Image (cartoon, rainbow, N blue to C red; front, side):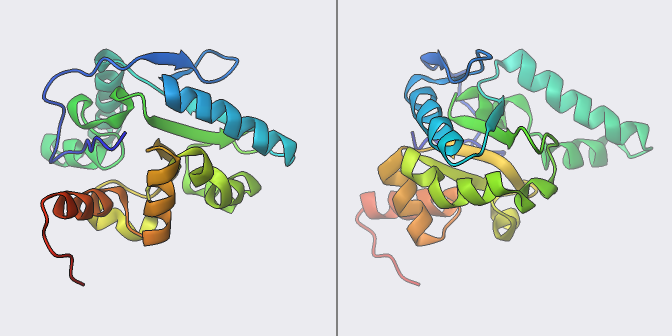
Length: 195
């Protein structure tokens, strides 16, 4: 659940998570994450909010195609190959650095807001997720205040399953996932945490 995947920690090999359908459309997540997503979506529905799972697990070919499409957008705007790659990676990481391969990443919107943009942060669905997602094991993966650490632009729609206990601890700490994992690694190594 706490596997950290980013540009600095890419997959050593392609993951093969046990998957399950997380919604009626058949969008897949890792099996435990899928079950928790279904429970979370039902709870949101009871509160009058219909969540939509836009993206779940993606295989390597799908992740590669998404990154390349984003890169082509910047090349079409006359950016250099290097600049296009860098800008694309800040939005859609390359396949080996994209956590959608773990089955734990979920792009979540709502029926009343269907655009993958920062405007989602102004919706009731986002407010609901911010208040309750941790109870179901999901954390906001790319918070606005952590862009320098995550190296990904703010994505209010991108949630990451870490399990309810871990989500509660991460939410209480106020840390982004990278910083939370670093603290846990130090604790596991017996290092004193300062700061």
